[in-house]
Amino acid sequence: MNLFSLSWNYIKSKPLNTLLNVLLLSLGIAIILVLILLSSQLEEKLAKDKRGVDLVVGAKGSPLQLILANVYHIDFPTGNINLAEAKSLTRNRLIESTIPLALGDNYQGFRIVGTNHDYINLYEGKIAAGELFKYNLDVTLGSNVAKRLDLKLGDHFHGAHGMSVTDLEHDEKDYIVAGILEPSGSVLDNLILTNIESVWAVHEHEEEHAQEDGEEHAHEKVLGSAYETGLPAGDEDAEVTSLLVKFRSPMGAVTLPRMINSQTNMQAASPAFETQRLFSLLGIGVNMLRSFAYIIIFISGLSIFISLYNALKDRKYDLAIMRSLGASRSKLFVHVVLEGIIITTLGGLLGLLFGHGLMELLAGYYEKSDEVGVTGLIFVQEELYVLLISVGVGIVASLLPAFNAYKTDISKVLADD
Image (cartoon, rainbow, N blue to C red; front, side, top):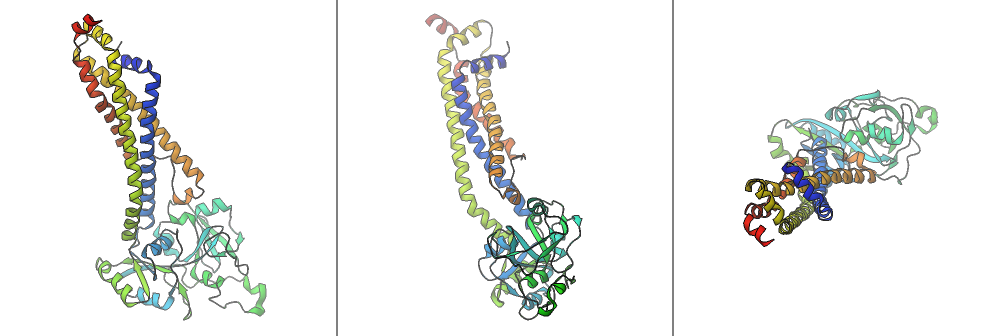
């Protein structure tokens, strides 16, 4: 019988101790894996959604709220900015490009965003059916929106004012589905996109419909003035929610935010800085949970050590017989170490299964997990390191018992028995 089989049989001979050690270790590993999966997916999602955006310019308020509302679309906007002031900023020589956004409405909880085709190109969005919006009140749906709401090309719907499902609907004008985007893994998947003039029309920023024209005129197609790029034409009261800015050179990052914040009625916020600040705030809780999980793993290692150490007292005679039959001291040492490795490997694999299962369970329970992009069905490199740590715990926990086995005195043990 080889050493592995012998170690495995010894482990099976004490099923209760083995089960408790394995479960304790798997619990700590599962908690760590859930945190790793959650943080890695969120970081990847946030990094993907802010790519190509150096600065967000909007109404004064909380910089973090400005970023969350206009880049990640998970908070309420800070307000609107004047269209003329926004156009003036786009002419700054330090700015390479700008993408306007107009927020304020939703449909069944999915945000309606007034913008242009540059916004879709920013995330490399591709059309799956129909076409990108061109006419006023035409919309292009993100893949999750079309799937969750079962909307198809040509369908009509009314938007609701605000960001919640229960807000008041705009019954006087309906949107028409002109296209559906392919899944991109970006924020586009969860948005309803249209041109800015559509948002204005719904909120009566434009008086393009004379009352006497009635319903007949309301269904006429009106081509948007800036559906591909740039800002649309509007009156002196016209507003947009924000501008997504890309710098022409690094000098823009130095001078533009300060200039905008101090010399205009607008506010500038950096997605990179605010996202880092958000993670630093969330990191406190994550680090506390991770520390708790490592404590559980340490306790598990201590439990394995105690089990092996106590079991060694009952097995001294068996070890002495093995030595008398020709087993070397090193074989006894490896035999005990193998027991620790087998227990922690089982705990690691079970923890891997528990961690991914728990993550998938939480993702299924949270109805907006598709929007956040969280799942338990992926593997990340850090998981391998956690498994190696668990095996290392087994090795360390078994070193002292293995060393005692190595020092077994054959004659003394057999004489005592």
